[in-house]
Length: 176
Image (cartoon, rainbow, N blue to C red; front, side, top):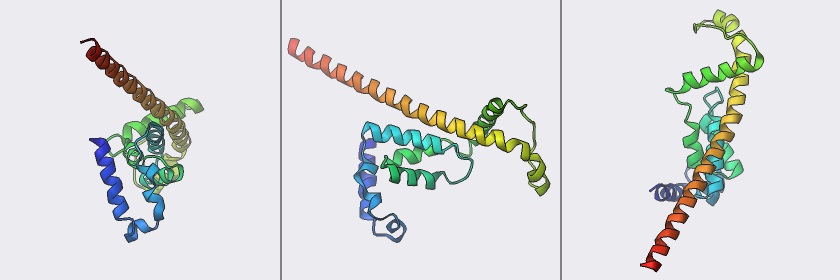
């Protein structure tokens, strides 16, 4: 099922590559590597998408597309992985990143309330931004690499399982 869906998406992009909104990317968007389903492309795209999702700015989609185009990774997998941080998971993930930054800098965690005022931006956010950004950077690197290697291990285990089951079926047919 996913293989057919990705192939269909690749054909759809190839047919629409001359539209004004896709023309800025040129022929790079129709590169076969962006739509290939090999292990390296998918696992690396997943890791890059997870790493980019920890950036605390709303630029995930643009950055993940540029990274996938630059490194020739599977584009749909990278986009889906970048949406691990979404409006439902944003608060716990960024709070965990803040706590990691606080632990690394050996600060005491602060309790703060959000107020949309200039005074709060000047005085309330000041002490929290350094641990927060450091935590986002560390979590981005650790989770991105961890996600890439975890998917790599799952992929290899599934491949070995399919190989052994095929080998058992073949030996069963020969014996029976």
